[in-house]
Image 1 (cartoon, rainbow over the protein chains, first blue to last red):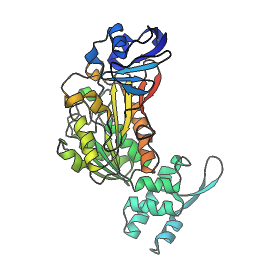
Image 2 (image 1 turned 90 degrees about the horizontal axis):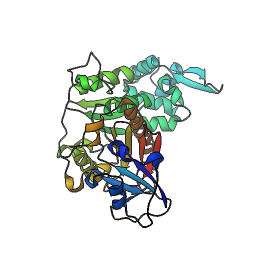
Image 3 (image 1 turned 135 degrees about the vertical axis):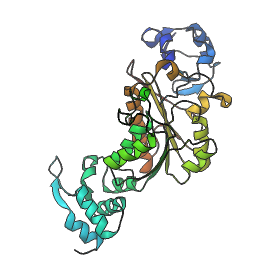
Image 4 (image 1 turned 180 degrees about the horizontal axis):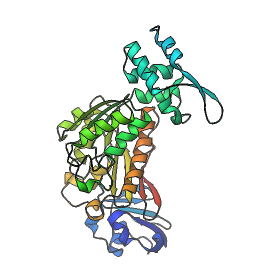
Length: 74
Length: 288
């Protein structure tokens, strides 16, 4: 099923092409992080459809995922 | 010359017209200074009196009509506490002064170094080695002397944040790095002051409003209070375009808060913003 993944800052290198990818139904956010090759401790905040979730959130068709490392520069 | 405040200001006002042809009365910076001297008031107080008579200080004329006279006067009555005068804090301070925020408390312990020159507005060849606080004071005096600025070369520590933010209407977190950000959030919460916080790494800019008692980005970035790890900016640096985006987001939110409007970057109905200038994407997220 198609989802959109937006990885910010240092995680941008792991973004799928065009931010689009197909995953198996019911995949969790943690499995998605693994699938993208991102070290789990590098993801500090995860959002699905604008709401904060943990690594065990199941994903649905059309979900929009956002991932952040720690960002504190100024 | 009379010293009735209203008549004094009326006498010093000039007729002008807006770009659409509508008539306005304005008062020049020099005339504001004269009126303040005659009336025994500060520049800020004089500008407020003028605005109450719908006389627009010329320095704010191009804030109109996005900011009307009552709104402009409200900004002049707003107390902002700004921590950090570097990449984010320098242009934030300048933006506050140009918008006409009337009372600003600011602090930074640091001095300018060459690596600040890529993005920090107040870092120039002339200010290298000087305290950021001193450059900030000079800049505000040059840009808008009506701003009553209390700026100190000071490292605000864990215990100091609540006192620093006390009595402010708005707290602005312009710190660089993670180390003090969770403490700043706690301090603003203790002081009961809404905080607008921003951070940058590479092409990414983030901004959020944190109401007292609510979680902020720094809480989520540092689970368990551990601020020790590397952050994205340690790899990606901090680029001026991302700084400028973050500063614009924070200033717009500060105006909303000063005018008593609902925050848009946090609170019950708002969401933080993340912008990636590498992909030109804009996302909104709820931290609740």
